[in-house]
Length: 171
Image (cartoon, rainbow, N blue to C red):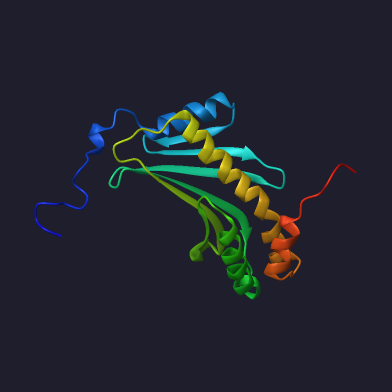
């Protein structure tokens, strides 16, 4: 790369008129969900789910002008099930179109992550709603698979297949 074309210096976060965390806070407030605003660049929201409660952490990364969503799963993975959980994460990520499931080694936990580059743009309330809704949808769909693998000893393939089945009609 030549000296006349800097890789990351083409946009200053000072040029952005609004803080994307403010937009996420407005959406969260409109939904009447509990949340904590830790700082200008951090917000944690709490959402009840079908299978478990979720805690979504949003960070505005000013150095690269991006918003990062991290959703931690509460279940700690026992070491004997770790390799099967890794296989599960690969299978889930192949089916997931937004964000990805990841492994946090220090906590022996699974997390969902998604990043939104913001350079030169502002986050709309519709985008914030989509990020929240799609992350929760992905986590709701695959949370049971994680439980099957960890606590029931189910193989990753079987756990994903069990979660992907759709019922027809009503019982």
